[in-house]
Length: 430
Image 1 (cartoon, rainbow, N blue to C red):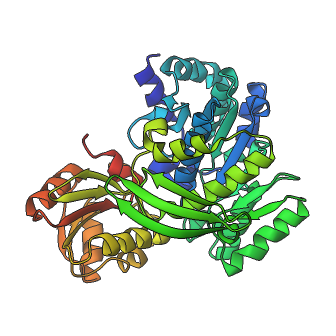
Image 2 (cartoon, helix red, strand yellow):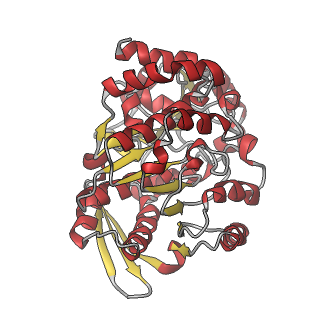
Image 3 (cartoon, rainbow, N blue to C red):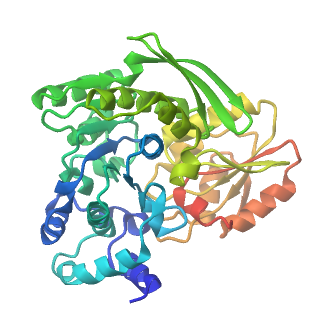
């Protein structure tokens, strides 16, 4: 098969959560275990950092990868979903997976796929493990997909676990309460393996501490050990001072990820770096600062408060749940108070759309759209829900048409914001 034919097989023949939703989710580790057994368990050859959380796990994973790359480690990075290209999911030192490896891997596993019928995610997880083992990475950063306890990535034995935060998302799979969701995410905590907790809530702290105690896992609370003292957006960078409350050392970071919410992820990364140093991972100060200042360039991260145009300013952000959208709107009101907003929105059907819509300001202009996947809410339905809730605007079947209309309608001082889904961002023309 060609590379294009191989990707077509992966997308069309295997159940894919991003396309069909919960029907693609496998609630046990049977398939990934069988796949990895057939591959002689490549995950057991890896030195891994495991990252879970409702929001921020992708950014935190990319930040860690950038810092470790700058420190001289051959760093694997597995994340999902991809925005533009399949290879974004599996990178080593920022370089996407070799297409020839993808072709060969799929050919080799076709027989077992016919037998066990794995999901797209299960296959890509196994592919990442095999690729990182084949390439002999020094450290592999593995981001969970959904949850943690039953996530396909959870067959690894990491040397550090990270949980960024807990919020309401994927309740149809993870549970209706914040403690249920925390319990699922906390399933990545392993015996005697340190865990870094980024943000905690009163309801989730005891959940994590209990799981950690049951596993004799040392716990580090980034929010309690580090204080964000200063934040200043400066052009293309975000200046951020974070104080280590144990040592009183203040790290004056310059972040190329300029969403203000990234300061919380940076705090989590600083806590991780301190734990990694205790585990004899050498991370010089210069690597920490260079890595944090060049996350996009080193890892290829995109879709997080990306300003793609000026006059009018056009921002794209993958925020797609309550916490993420609140943070986007808070930053708009902080950075652009008094400006007129043009929101381009598209969601998937399994979100609580009415709850999300209530987060947006009514005195803005709206453009409703959809990605071209079965899971997307049709733009006409979204417009009707929004209109019923008091949000007026037109709908468009193509994000690019919606974007053109918004830019043409906006004044030079207006702000155009695209959010609601990774998948509509992925369909924006470069």
